[in-house]
Image 1 (cartoon, rainbow, N blue to C red):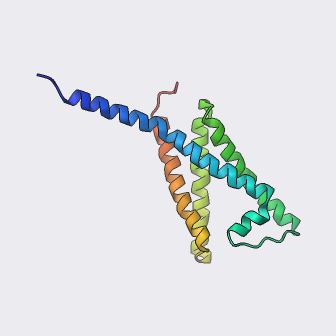
Image 2 (image 1 turned 120 degrees about the horizontal axis):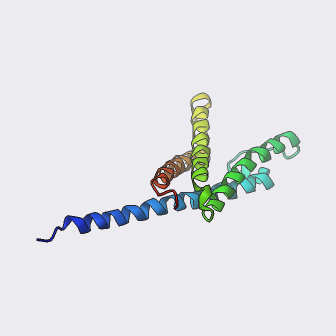
Image 3 (image 1 turned 120 degrees about the vertical axis):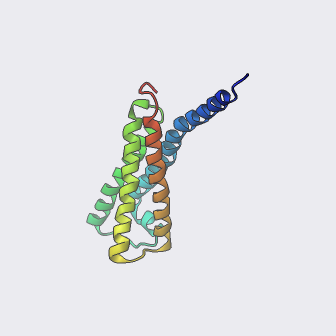
Length: 152
């Protein structure tokens, strides 16, 4: 008598294996692209990037521009690390942790702002939803990546 459960469990294992291998790459690609793109834009053109969110930045306030550029260079760097780790497997764990922390702390800061200052504009609120999705994706991707053998 043939045991039907073995092929089913084999198929299930293959599907899980594909997800475990694909999810980290998806998170690195999406998260890295978002951070590198928006981080770069805000480093090189902070006035126009903030205008997209409905904020007016005084283009003559050199200290404010410097602060914006400095903060967003960190995002750009995390994004570039994530994109680089798509090809350099030894960086993947660190990049996934970086994405999870970056999006998680963005969301945390926004939630603190929501509690202390009130609701921001609709663009920022949609950003919060995106960050919630990305921190979840990055965290799950890190967990999936940690299930792979260390040589992967």
